[in-house]
Length: 303
Image (cartoon, rainbow, N blue to C red; front, side):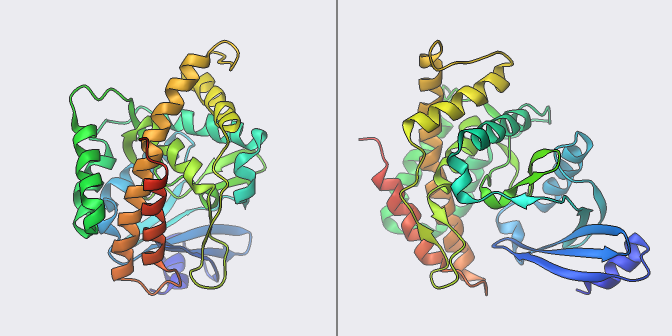
């Protein structure tokens, strides 16, 4: 795929400079320039439809763009999209436990969760079913139990439109505030899923340049930090002030919900990593990553 030719054809640029931005675990990004114009080209990874619905991703990305939560789409085609370039700096993993940063993330997530898109089945259920075939034997019983629990008619956790990949590289600081980016995995999900995933991601450092190309840490947010986040999130979600001193029960109930989906996050990303390990040339030890996520699931299970 010739990135420069695509930009010349669809953006009507005469000259194009192409700069690789990121080779992630799901797609490749390029910053493209032509005189004073700048854009971002997203090239989807092979077999991306194993992990999400590309047609639904394109639809929801457009809808989120219209309400200012995602960059504008400038052009799109088979396996690629040209987007508005959002100038900013990705968050650092160490920033994810700072109260000031947490408040910004909480508000952004709560606003995303209130976007009125047409509801669908929680994507966690479909991903458990679709990805479960790769589960090692010692995980299969856990997947079955989790699926049964989420499928119960009285399972009452809120289902909202969710990002489903909230981590430091998908949040950037801009001149106008914090922005969520990279909505490939966005879909309807349980409300606590984004928060549980965020809390987990504090524990994984992906900046390591030698095998296995990541490092597990012991940085899971402390109970105090979790309560800070919950108060900020619920204040935006309910559109009324929520304080630790006066809403302790409400905050505790929310964090109990988050723990369930923190555990689910370990299972899903472990399965995802096993599937990625089958078809990838990316310098990342997906099998070891899966094993560590499964270990974290058992380590943090409620007994």
